[in-house]
Amino acid sequence: MFLEIMAPVLPISFTITICVSNLAKCIVSVAGGATRAALTMHQARRNNMADVSAKDGSQETLVNLAGLLASLLMLPLVSDCPSFSLGCFFLLTALHVYANYRAVRALVMETLNEVRLWLVLKHFLQKGEVLDPTSANQMEPLWTGFWPSLSLSLGVPLHRLVSSVTELQQLAEGHQEPYLLRWDQSQGEVQVVLSQGAGPETVLRAATHGLVLGALREGGPLPRELGELRSRVRADPNKESWVLVKETHRVLDKLFPEFLKGLQDAGWETEKHQLEVDEWRATWLPSPEKKVL
Image (cartoon, rainbow, N blue to C red):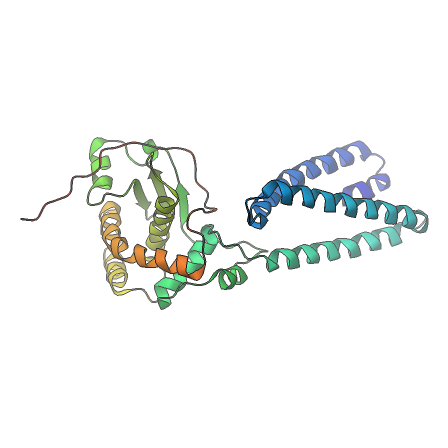
């Protein structure tokens, strides 16, 4: 909108300015549509997404009509005064951004994305309590973004994790979970391959597993098992990552059921999530359980 206002001031590059303005509008339209879809799903409490979307569209049409009428009334006042026009634009734009900030801050999303999961998990590891959705949403930054120092990739193709049968056996050894995880300590990256039958709970555990590995490289209190594991990681930074992943599988066998129950008791929806998951899936033979006589 700013480019459209400034286009008449730059007659030499008028066409280019208008084209760039329309390109920016297209980008905003795609991003806004994706965001609106997520919020519409959140507001459709009775599985009435079509009804909520229709009412949202009707309200937007009414507001746009009111804005059109107001602009027609203001046009004679600003047509001969460019400075006043720019002043109105900056004032109304600031008001628009502030209103959007307040509206998004008022939302309480009960589904977990990577940021909210990290905030809740970090609080759980440090204090043994699960944050409720209201507290976690208030802690989630809106302006600058907030990402763990770890890069988490879910649903990657199998060839990105292993290049031989031996590596596959190492990743599958010692657990029966329907996912394989590789931790690259030097790059601070966790990649997860999901099996064909991986559901929302499996994805949630895999994401939790990756974030727990990231917590081993950071400060702050941890449960006893993870604290001992972090000490070993710091004592031997060159230790094989697949060994650490195998050991954290054992820790999560005890820790994750408690964490999952805490999420459900606090009001989080664990049957669905907003974690970014790619579509790749794989099938492999599970590691045989060792029988103790």
